[in-house]
Amino acid sequence: MNRILLVEDDEALCTGIALALGTPEVRLTACRTLAAARAALAGQSFELLILDVNLPDGSALDLVRGLRPRDPVPVLLLTANDLEVDIVNRLEAGADDYVTKPFSLAVLRARVAARTLQDTLWFFTYRFSLLPLAVTLPCFAVLGALLPPAFYRAAARRSLVERLCQAE
Image 1 (spheres, rainbow, N blue to C red):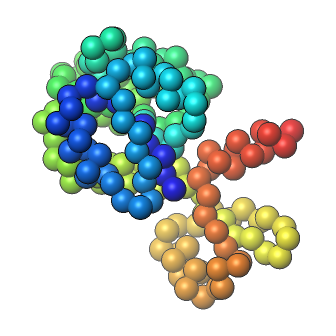
Image 2 (cartoon, rainbow, N blue to C red):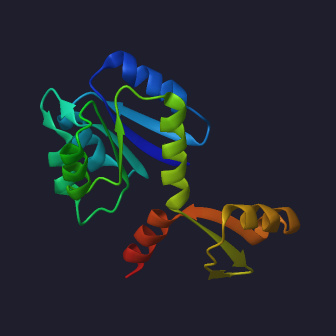
């Protein structure tokens, strides 16, 4: 399951994005302020952050700068600022992607799908040992069709890293 944190102060846009991204595979947490976003981040981990840059209680760039470099979670920024210098500054602050408003919800869905697929490591288990095997999504689909489910599963790269760090 992909856990996504959406931080957007515009209620109608927040609802539209939540509906557009709503699938059984996505658990979306919506916040309207930086304070609420910080509280959500303190309580759980996410596979993707979608942040409006200009919020009532500050800039989402401050949140991104505070996360980097200790947290590699992908960050997609939403903003009305489309000047080249703004885009460069936001990417240099640690954002992974940038969408200017107004935007198509189909484009946002595609960017979210690309980000969440990039952060997924497909691996196979064999008996009781774990052999990580990174494969493309089409290869995973073929192998999944050929092998019984007991032989494979998928996990987010971040989940694997967290488990390995806890084991140390």
